[in-house]
Figure 1 (cartoon, rainbow over the protein chains, first blue to last red):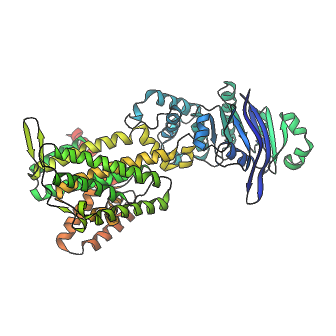
Figure 2: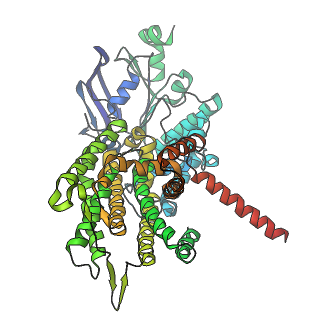
Figure 3: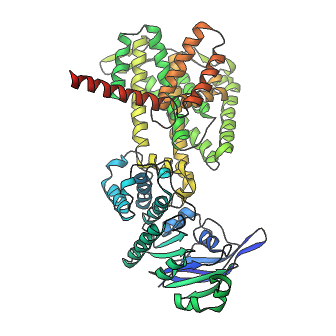
Length: 247
Length: 319
């Protein structure tokens, strides 16, 4: 079943076509990676899907519904959540508060002005489950901006996971992580994907991670998709080897 | 908090009447500063128009008490009407302002504040123009089988203490609630907040209305206490009061603005006892305070109290 469908999507910035007619369909339960050189339009594509930018033309459908031009908060409510390339967390709040904020938003009780957040057992239990999943429990009472960068990246993914999204967009999730943290991240993503909680699209430069993790790889170059297929097929593609893999 | 309340209740038995009257006004200013801090400290929006909502509360309260017979629950009715007007006013102003942020937000709130000031200044038939509304009769509080005359300074102080404490408890509940957590998250990172599905304008508007409502409540207590509602209450310069109080006390702690109000008013009082140029000396104190206590003085006081408590406990365990 098609979860996400993109038709002839274009985005122009200062006369430059950053996304130049992308067509893409993603099925439910898929884990795909988007790769390509800098400036290929990978992050711009994520920005367009998540509503951060509005496309010049083309359409985006999610679960059969047209979501083109929707503001980010509406797209999140439809079931698409993202983690950013640069750490994007609530810096002065504690690690626990960050995750709890995500859970509160997911449950739709953020407008409640009288219940004590400390006393919301179900919300806190879920927040602790995600903290545990992301190995962040020991940092729970520290300000999010004060923990190591790799953990901040984990926290950002934790916030995204708290959304119970159908589609998770992860933009260079391992940048700033050390090899050990990257390995842990890889295992975690495999586990989340195996459980079938959500579909995942990752923009990544770490080729080892990409070829290990993703069953489907999309290669972008100058705003277009130049290859789409399994790791074997992408590795064999002459044009991909020439423009990106460097052979 | 209970300890602070106990001290505030006991103070009229210890302090001279003058200081009790001063303390009453400090509580009102403290509530005004706390209402401002909902917007500034918790939501990250700097408003220079809070005086407009304070003045709205003050004028409605003054008008009701002056034009309606001062008996029974009329002070409560005056407060209720003040809350209604400041809520409506802050909703209307907020709908426009929350579309903006940063300095543009601050400037637009200042402009709206000045519009309210101009209305107050020019609408002589209702507001008394530049004279304001004066000679406001001191109200009585009527309960079944009992009547409390607020003419007695202590009675009026206790009435203000009661209303301010109820307001502080409500504000405390709000900032600890999911809504309070959400506005803090929006202050920290509006972009991330949008990407967890929050329509940040709605939450900013909610915070704006709550802030305006409590500023209006402070105003409603102010005019009967002082006996006058003057246009200066709506002026942009009056909006600087909660800003300075919050900076002195600290915006990061819930009671910071209340502590700031206490320090501000006491400094004003004591410096003015020795020199007419109290503003000059106060300016120096403010600069030093911002330089040496960038988080405000409340966190330092709080740490000091904790250390004192530890010291007392240690002494007890030794004896």
